[in-house]
Image (cartoon, rainbow, N blue to C red; front, side, top):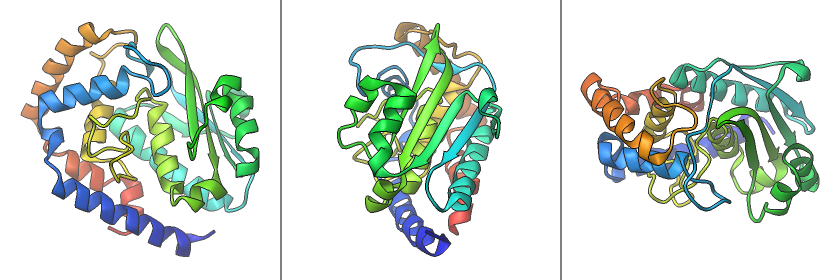
Length: 260
């Protein structure tokens, strides 16, 4: 695979992103909508019902990447662009490392024939048995709600078959920052299976910024986090964070690489 293939694929995805962003109501400008979307995405789990607590990283993130398939340079370039984007948005220190012993995130590019076994190796039997129709998979572990380890497995041939390679790179690592749930109540968003977003939407930018404000603490319950969200969203409305989220989304390195 090379850039000749990737750019048309991403271009199609980006047209969907642009059209949906303009066609839908500007939800990221509505504090009540954003607050509910945060609750649904950050305090719920895709495979575990019920209310959860805020989960987030309190330490630098070091990513070790295993390339089990070809196109290593392309995959490395795409993931590193997105990691730099996430660093800029959240303020987290996120870098790749060649030393697996220093890593707290393991990211594997593999093939579909090894997909289940790699998920089992990195995330356990239960995750491997719950793959269902998932094109790619990620998970994390916590101590007292602070995330300390995460793993991501992308079966490249399967992802390409579904036109989801870029979407997998973007969504899975973004989810392991502490936004693990998919919800129809977040749109337009990569955290919504019925939304065509393949890249971070303006709403996704706001959700990430909220999660990594120091006022949002790992372990907060829904009741504890709601008034904090209200305060932060008032600030975001006043200082332009909400209105500027479109510019942030379109100025990410990955977005710019695509050619828009």
